[in-house]
Length: 242
Image (cartoon, rainbow, N blue to C red; front, side, top):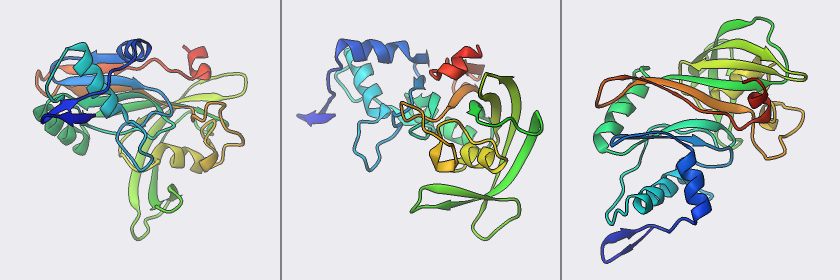
């Protein structure tokens, strides 16, 4: 995006890209836009300077709605770059504030699908670890006991299905820590397929990890209605389990 005469100028999306973006919108109204992110896309600008989804979606809305003014697209939460699935953007500052509060107070219920290399010993379990983030390595380390500077992390996993070589788990996230699902599942010997950073034996061909934000349940920030959004997976192993 650039500015011209004080007004924002968004790039024009080629038709193929425009159609792709339109086809991955899971829900939209005047307050929210919920999008099915592919692995490799970044939600918010980072040091790579690659265009982020926030910028792309602004350009999409401006082009679709023939909007000459500034488009508001607030980032409510982020997914790691190699992770796919449902991500929420706010289209108004009111919605952004209320959704941020919902995340902060645990009123946003997030469920992920994870394809792991080993079956867990128990089919369902609440995991509690204490996580320490190493900024230089961009990696999180787990401990079963509190340590100085560590943050408590909780999730519940449930075994869903076995494939020929892998195992599909559903993960409900109770806290939102850096690389939490990746680190906690690795800590119990269930490393996510393709996740070299946490011990996977090989990468996925497209550089993704097999972790997908599958389902989000929350109360609409304005209409106060119960919402449940489900994101179709891109991962071939997950698709085979549908």
